Image (cartoon, rainbow, N blue to C red; front, side):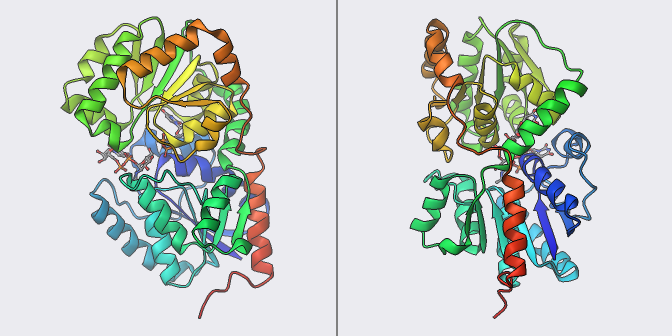
Amino acid sequence: MKIAIVIGTRPEIIKMAPVIDEIKKRDIEFSLIHTGQHYDHEMSQQFFQDLELPKPDHNIGVGSKSHAKMTAAVMEGLEDILKEEKPDIVMVQGDTNAVLAGALVASKMHIPVGHVEAGLRSFDKTMPEEINRIVADTCTHLYYTPTEKAALNLLFEGADPENIIITGNTIVDACLRNLEIAKRKSTIRFPSDKIITLTMHRAENVDNKSRLKSITRALLELDNFTIIFPVHPRTRKNLEKFHLYKLLAEAEHIKLVKPLGYLDFLLLLSKSYVVLTDSGGLQEEAITLNIPCLTLRYNTERPETVEVGGNILVGADRKRIVNTLRLIQENPNFRMKMINAPNPYGDGKASKRIINATVDFHNKGKLNIRP
Ligand code: UD1
Ligand code: UDP
């Protein structure tokens, strides 16, 4: 059996790393294809080093483009690569443009698509990621879903239940394994005060001046915390464009840093009082590491984190962000409840289940979908 893995951005590298480890352990043939959507050292190469991943066999080198141009260029590149590689299955992860392009190309070539983290829905079609999720799942043959809720979403959309496998999320595998390594290897140092780890990059927040301004005002008010903010390149550009970067840089309690490597970032997260984020992966990592999460969004495709009590949606609303933090600080019981919220994303063995199911499908001839 041969597996082709398509990755394009930081979270895909992190969440596919445990799957690649599992494939290597079993000596299964594989080909690693990077679309090149993320290309800065600290958004891509750094994670190959931290996670000891093999160099990609192919890099399409798409770079930064509009959605249509990026998707089209990746599709074109991928078609040629898949013709040459002839894999038995193409694995994609999550909801980026790499997933959209990978799922469309492979399914039209009658190569089965295995979607890691299938079935997530925010039910907000203004998000590019929601469109990617829906289209990718329409093209998917094997759905590796992180939770029962994600599996149910797929059932309601008419997916074949035989092809749905509830695996847990590979972020738990990545997080648990690498936190131990980080504790041994990372040399990062933090202040001893109450740390808020902050990340944001979601288009609906950082491309929108009034939302970015409102979040910035909240950050400036939160001066009884130390805020550590590894700035995503998209966010840096927009903070500069809207003249907000300097305001943050001049605030003593806010530390603006470059995006961190995975080991350093995990250690930072594990030492945080709360995390403030609009990231998908961070909502999952926060609950895995028992760190209260405040999500800078009005909806989430990770509702499990909210339902179990580990995540609060605060949107981009200055008052709501500041007042929620104040309430948590004044009521230690609130924070304790959030810390103790159970993890809905499994036991850290998702990648094992993903590969077990794939091998089983292959052995039973169920990966052959040619007409
Ligand atoms: C992409 C994904 C998003 C994911 C995020 C993870 C899509 C539609 N979006 O968003 O779902 O959550 O990655 O971080 O696939 N840039 C650089 N250097 C880089 C990469 C990007 O400077 O290495 C800058 C460019 O100006 C670029 C902008 O960031 O235009 C946005 O990059 P892009 O890959 O289009 O989207 P992300 O916001 O990174
Ligand atoms: N991350 C990191 N360094 C950082 C910020 C985030 O290693 O400076 C990791 C984080 O631990 C998580 C992933 O990047 O695993 C999330 O990526 P991102 O927020 O870019 O994308 P999303 O999950 O929203 O698609």
